Image 1 (cartoon, rainbow, N blue to C red):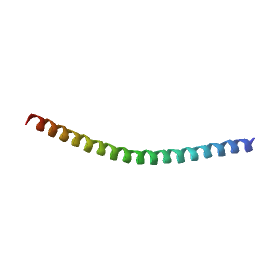
Image 2: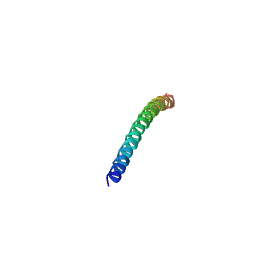
Image 3: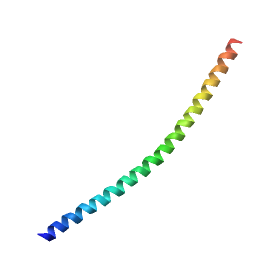
Amino acid sequence: MQGWIDLFRGLGESLLTVLRAEVATLQEDLSRSGRIAGGALALLGVALILLFWILGLVIFTAVV
C-alpha cells in the first residue's frame, strides 16, 4: 500500500512542477506580448497625431 501512496505523491509533485513551469512560461509570454502591445499603441498614437495634423492642414488650406 505504501508503494501506491508514494506513486501518487510522486505524481502530484510532478504535476505541480509542470504547473509551475507552465505558469512561468505564461508570465514570460504575457510580458513579451505586453511590450509588443505597448509598442503598437505608441505607433497608433503617433499615427493618430499625424492624421490629426494632416486633417488640420487640409482644413486650413481649404479655408484659406
